[in-house]
Image (tube, rainbow, N blue to C red; front, top):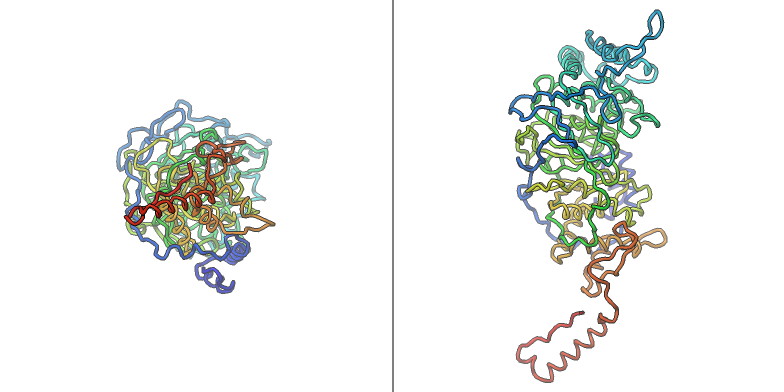
Length: 633
């Protein structure tokens, strides 16, 4: 969209790009109130956007991922080493059934008991026996599937809604497709689910807050866990209300996905989600997946975070494009998931934006909801080796599943089926959650800036100090319903990438103006050799310098150009900036300089004039000499 276009023209452009009415209204509202909505001289700074090749940016190689080494902080649920071309065998732990608040409570645990009505009263029976009994019966339609699931979830018989599932099979699919599902796909899903005790023979730890740890699973183990999630077998995971045991975890059982919706767009989203997931199950049931995935919770104590104002790194290389998508052109790079702190967001509910779509086309990501507690402010979740199964079109209400993902055909940067020595596909996704700024101006406060740049840094950095780190593939992180300023978020991600020693590949999702603006200021920062510490300090001053009476007197980029284009002596930052790095007082670059040790601009001009006059009187200038320039210090 071009600034200055009337709202009806902007609406037409967004409709052509498949945005929903709700999203269009939100965008137009943000356009009215966004602080960068000023006439700006910076728009003409980049007359030509340099086009470089995706191949110039690093992708994952066989040595780009941390090795899989069992330890107290890395639970490996399969035997090492792995044999190429076949699913690894499960590792048999000393205690298969850990029924405590440090591990996933498994459906087959002997401790999972369920009350059953008998002629003599209620008795407790192992719930897994009920699951096996219900799923082993022939199931020929969605009504029978509902009865099977509710037979071991009887307390939810009046609460859970399966009308969306019935709509899918009775109204969306034709009779032959429904018969194929219940005759071929569903039996395979049942077999996967009931194989869980044989496939997972070690306890799965919970990835708790502020406890960095990793879990490595085979793709087949993940498929079995997800089949159990579909059949809603995980105990104690059907409520998130406090003070329930899992109130700080996302839900994992699929019951919310089955509910119906009177509003047609939402009903269609549920249909498309089921198409994605049933396609995944069809694939893994027809042929055993042979790979491995690693889920890593990263946590960085605040004491170990960078002192941003002291950072001397330059901004990294940047490729920015208004076309392409993170999951396509960014394939093989570190792909950013614009996450909810509850990983996966609304993937099992009504949500269908960037994170939910990523979890639908990479369904193995959904299993992270089983064991990942809500992310804290200096935490991220990294998933290595996940496989993509689907392609799609649209976004939010217009999202549509369009078929199978063929890595070699669908992604220009895909390396096909390349894996590392452990069987992990050379793909990696990092989940980082942005703040929700209901009051958009708050994002320019120093506390908010610090939180967001730290969050990005934790996600982008590599504690294992691996060589040849791939580029980060990202975009307008936290800039939709969370009201983030895309210009600001681009700079914060550049700063974090520079500190993490990674290049940045940025997708603006059709916004050509944003592409040009970010490219322009990136070129300016590079050509003027502005270190990220200096850029950071000016970002921290923007709010206090430009916010007055509820509005901004300058756009962010115009402000940065104005302060960074001043002569170096005038760009000297104040000796102390309160709260810039989260401390009460933080000293910036170098020592504080006494006023008496610095010339004023007027004094410099007078001194330089005196020197020129001296040279003129003595004829030095006529001989081609140049008078020395006068600098502070």
